[in-house]
Length: 559
Image 1: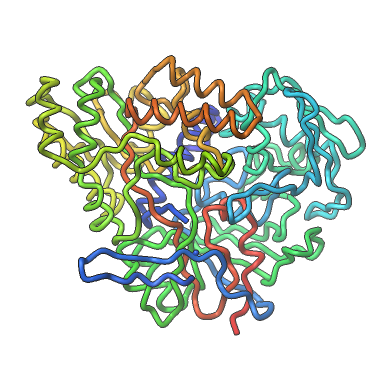
Image 2: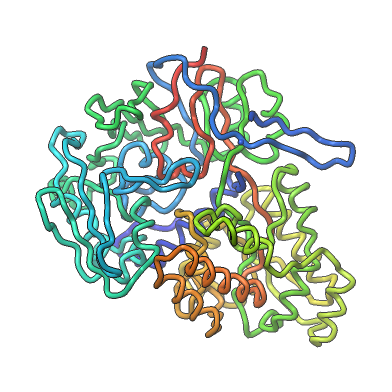
């Protein structure tokens, strides 16, 4: 994981690490996933493929429970919401801290600490702050707390991972006893949606001032408004949350008195802990344990909605992959169905886009299906792919594929891409990097020198394709290969600048078509969110929204 030292807290870099590198490390330790409802027990048909069901809601809890334990694949480097852009801190903070808006398990957005909001002009957002909300220390939430929390993302000394959310913000001010007004430099259709992520997290202004650099650390902790409060943090071992009796939202009152997160970095250790009952549950189940846990008597394995796509990032456009036709040929030569079977336990689907289909849920129903369908398709066809590459004249040219010894899935992807590159006449070389060095590919351009491709599992934090396509605009730090296309940039700007759902969908769809025509990133596959619940507990809603939704509050005793 990247360092959290002050020197490394460069905002766009840290954002990239948490969404991409962190996502890969997540996938590494336990194999990450994406898609969208019944219990999940893989069933293999006669052809050897695996089918699975997606669960919207596990059986409701029968009652309260004193405590439950939860496995997590890595210890958070911090619980500071400004740096919460990866699975370990977010799945904890989702139960402790709250944002102005809330991202729900069905991937809709609703009011939260902001009881309502308006958009009186294209460059103005006004948030009415919910009255009577208490922080964990008993103090009352005010508009000043909201202003202090949001402005913090704009402070270069903080180096927030969410700084990009505020790039169009002109001012954030208190405009009433329980009212905050945000003025923008220009219309921004994504800004308000981001208020459901860590961008919109609210912390006590007094706590931020008092804790200083200790904020979010084992020593300083956090003081928010969520259903659980920060309890204790035993570095290297576990972190404990306690039920907050003063929580304002009666519908999400915690059923458990305590939640203990146990840091288990080894995938086998986590699976064994599920089977033995040492831990009661955990997100991101290792894919090679799907069969084992799907038939376990120790609990049940569930799958739910996700927003993640596994993608190969083209990081060198000056080599043979600088030719769009060669990128197309390579994608057509990759056996993506084979990767899903061998690397993801058959649980997943080949991806035709850089975003999952549910990212278009805000588009008008009349155009949604057409947008999803109207994308370039690159069917597996090694022979045709070889012909395309031959016409491009790249036979025998070297490309370097970066990977890391993180898990079997990551290794299988690298080998499949290597095989595809050979099939079209390229001379591929796999370069294996340590997890730490692999992370620097997302933060340091110098680290990418000599690397043509590297893998990411890229998830969105809002239900909008702009969350991904905006990352590929010219000049964006997350545009790792330096790809540029004026038509694409114009489409993204048009989409970002309009609040009309139909117009935004049209512009976003145009950006998508350009990106998939040019392939600066190669889409591979998607998988569902996975979660294992032991026999003592139930009530969770399987969904990628666990990164921002207080999922632990719904877990209670099983009948």
